[in-house]
Length: 125
Image (cartoon, rainbow, N blue to C red; front, side):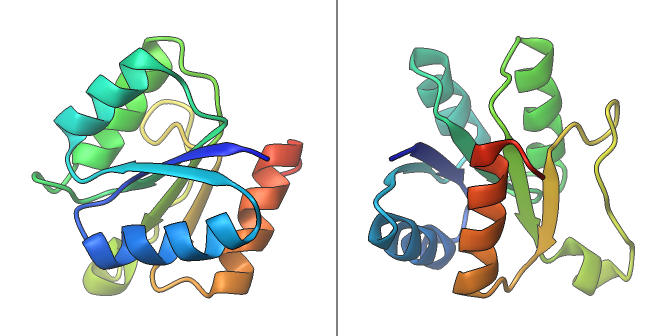
């Protein structure tokens, strides 16, 4: 089906995404840092990127999304994070500040993850 790339510093999140997405027939690749993710994405673009906000730095995911968009990356980006719950702040997509296609809070249920991924891959989110 689709090639999905996950960038998250939490190996458990990567493993859970891999488990549920591979069960749906997707190929999943991953990185745990912004630098690893940027390098891998520079070599080949996936059909969808799942990205955490906080990696090595608190805003690495946001900066990575902006850098990718500025560089012409046009695949959908799903941002997963627990920042909203931890800070009480609400985040949402924004063309300039947060150029992602969907934003979901962790923890995300397997069924919601699959639902959002399918919508993004179909261009409906």
